[in-house]
Length: 451
Image (cartoon, rainbow, N blue to C red; front, side):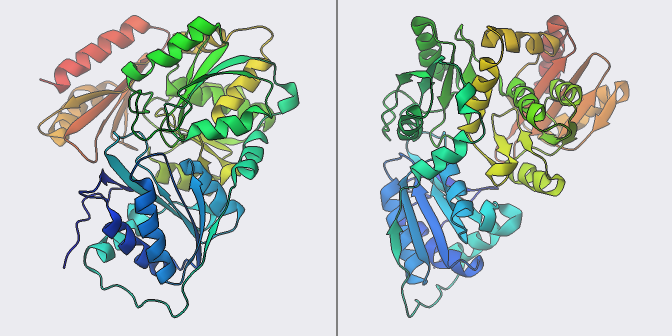
């Protein structure tokens, strides 16, 4: 018998419950995971999705039948699995989550020792093949044991170690968990921080009564922006469902693009660690490169995607890595991404900013390097579009192909890359000190892409 593995992707598993992700698939993963990854003790957890407990129960059954001991940390965020795997020196971890997908979805993310990612080229394809057609390994003579463990306090103390809490000012901050998994952790953090937290949708609820927890969707930003303006807050933060990404808003309720956050956080790290290496992705680059060099750091470009960024960070021993998609990676967090560290670093910088507002700190960079944000276009043949655009624009500038097609001209640049999963091509454009030029070139490129 062959089992459906359509939910297996490049970096994780994600599908609709119970069609492509269900208890049967989870059980088989549990049986094969210890064998493939030499795992004798793993940590498991789930976000707020309604199908999470049932999937976790089946996964744990498979793990213990294979003789693997399990630490269950309950409802959590993805980065808490990363933290637990490294902190407790375990052989691996499995997080049951579909991140920012609609409520009918669920999935899994996997790590091995030291919270190293398991993705398409590091074992996920082998797991997929075994789940699809493999003969189940023999049930172990001695079943594994299951331990329930609350790691919230240890996790929060580690997160707070990235800032000097004693120097934080009593700022007013809107925090919007989107009914995702961030709410309970914010309640734990609150007692250690001087901030006045204005809480929005902190109650975890897998039915998503206030919409999918995905602040990248413009319609999902209004609640945070409105709360910032109405409360007179110094800024706002919103998270996705498993809180591995956070999104910042200034004191006027304006959304801050993830691109500008990369440079902002690079500066924060370089002020404490002069000469450190910073990893960034090729979609938008100029602002990051300039800030890193101005602050004495070494900018190193990497293909986008968490597996590539983490691998590059380990190779270079980089202290921080950031993607414009709002994934931020930290050397002292096992080179993993966190949605809880960034907002604390931002508010630490704001606390030192001599009365300046968050908009003051961001506006100068946004004016220096205006960007289009990522714009998707559905096309019949992405390769044909890439070839056509390169033929026209390549001779005018410098071409690089670290991730898709990047063309750099004196006053503007763009990156065009195709989706791995759908017939979509993604465009990012930026310019030097010229918003009109950026907009004109974005319009021009979109017309050619969609022709």
